[in-house]
Image 1 (spheres, one colour):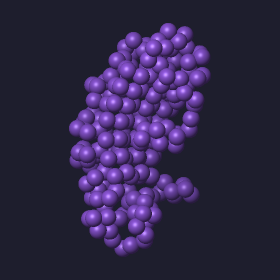
Image 2 (tube, rainbow, N blue to C red):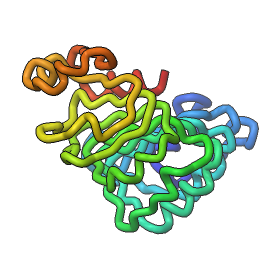
Image 3 (cartoon, rainbow, N blue to C red):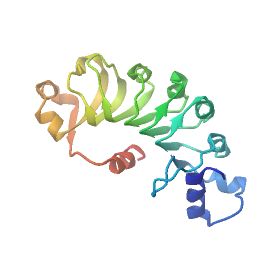
Image 4 (tube, rainbow, N blue to C red):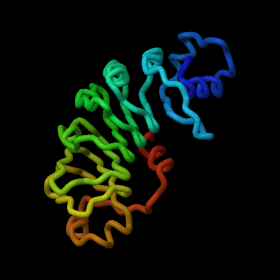
Length: 201
């Protein structure tokens, strides 16, 4: 594997090897792809290597630049159920990425996309962190978690949501949120790792 973070995951699970069998790769259902290692050095990324994991259900991308090559690979991950994007940058925006047939959970942390990509009711869960939700943003989902998002002027009535998860501070500082308590759940503010664990449940 040329993708550094994938190699580390496989080494951890199966031990260091020169190559991995198809049977081993079929056991992997969750991957995290990092652009940098803990020392801040670049890790190599070969997007097409993701296609070697036929049972991939959960994918997290951290500080990745998503150009046409990466997008074309994502469009082939037909079994993907959860996509988490941390501080990623799209050089070619592709709405099709967010229309994969089994994709049900989306986490965007510091990753800007047109919110219109998330409005079609395909998702059971959308989590937004370190992004701004504009006043006219429309969401159609079972669960919307906005604990770490900027919601200063967002109009809740523009969306169709079964459960809205907000932080204690958001709730206390928003009269509008306090007017819709029937479907709002107030939770303690948490860090990004905890939110990812919740999304992957």
